[in-house]
Image (cartoon, rainbow, N blue to C red; front, side):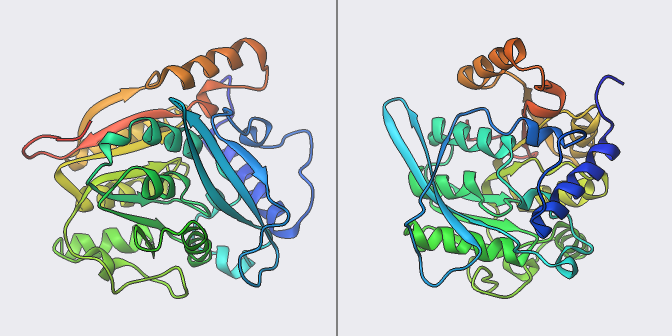
Length: 320
């Protein structure tokens, strides 16, 4: 194989997480590829050293911004250092909680540029990590009827809740702790269970009481396919919570056969593969081609997010 195998990449990604916990610097040789290539440059991130939001420690605030069609989009994002203990990591995949990965960046840019797919819809982001960047921007700019931002780790969801509050989005977005394995198990036993009954966790970022039992019109999911053991749980969660006429946007690199196997698992579950595209936005594709020509560290197999559109059998998708 010309590229690193998924298991080796997973080991390197866990080492990246360990370095984030201990504050140790990232080594040069053998470092994980997504740290060598960190961004497509679609959103600008500016550190705000003087910004404060309450009594805070071990965190910094950043202003993420982008200009699309002459319109400026901005979001305050809270970055936290040394926020996870070893005990909090056991038994759960927290690799996406270290930074904003290129898939989340591309998904955020894509939904902002295609905001009509969110307008008046109930939107859910699964596995949004420490920022839920795409879902938070949808809540702020895309006129969704409601937005639910989720991750499997309570500390991540607490951080997302601070982001929601600092951007004045409390009435537009709610934050829930949702672990796919627990959700899929409960949904498998009783498909009529409400989403908030499947949420777990405590703290300012969890709200297991709010919301209703209606499914979601649009589900967002960025770079959540890294560990094979999570695929079926994620597929079941998407299937259970997606409206019959809804749309799920799953964005992740191919990573060898990983993306293809996830798409096959989704099809076996009964989801319809509406479209699967590498070239879904001209600006992202242009930057991909530029990186291919100029950056020897750029590898499309592990860096270029592919967009998978999933629907459910029913009346047919009314989005997009």
